[in-house]
Image (tube, rainbow, N blue to C red; front, side, top):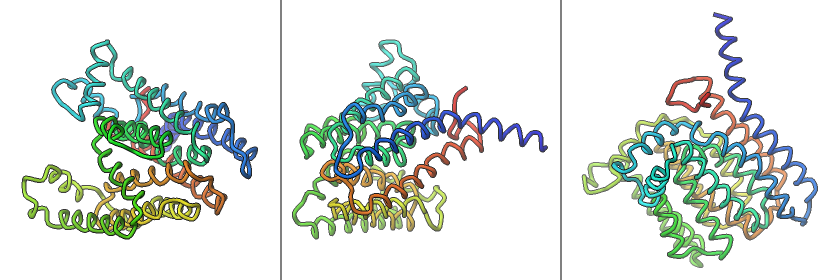
Length: 342
């Protein structure tokens, strides 16, 4: 038994080598740039793009081969003509199949598109280094390889926002055809930009109250509500007493606010963290949406000066947490868990 356990540990360690190389190479580049740009100096455009290189190499190498949703998306790709998702994403899949790409080839094209969008964002931010550090810690693995449609839609929104500082109908159409969550993204951004923040926050509280009521009493809404089945699934997800990663992210969002970030995003994140603990961890996807918008908002308009070292320390802890996601799933094994396709 001891020999078998040792073999499993060696196998897990081997599977984790690409992840360790990714995080180590990125952090080495980040520390170098952060040290050289201390104060008000910002990294040059080539330096920002070089910091993206580890993400690009990893994304193109392992696209379609890792993640808890890899098998599900591969099956959806095979029956793209008969199982419609959002129209834009379905068209991308069907078009890729028409030119002869398999699923892995399709996801590599998507990975390249996402990296181009990410590059267009970081070259225009006032604080690109912190943005990329936080992106790696909280979004890269979970969104790039799991929430593929959501990731692409959010990066489209981000690329437009950093150019024009606002979101319009064209942005909504371009991103919502990839993932319907963009409808909520635009709504949140408009509420955050409202001059009447009390009304905006009150609207969010009302929405949270309605959502909680629908979860507690799904019979009230009946079959007419399109997401009834989704609400019923909330109870299937195992809940913990405390989600420490969410609380760390909440602390970082508070630091965003202290650096000139939107008060609305702070209020929204607080409300969602409470709902995650009271209702279901699946709502953390909504937390991620608000988190991305809060990060984009503050890094576009400001450079984090207050509590910057503390924020970086929190994010480094989140990076370890992010790395533990594939580590634990590779350790547990099974086709439904995160894996590296050998």
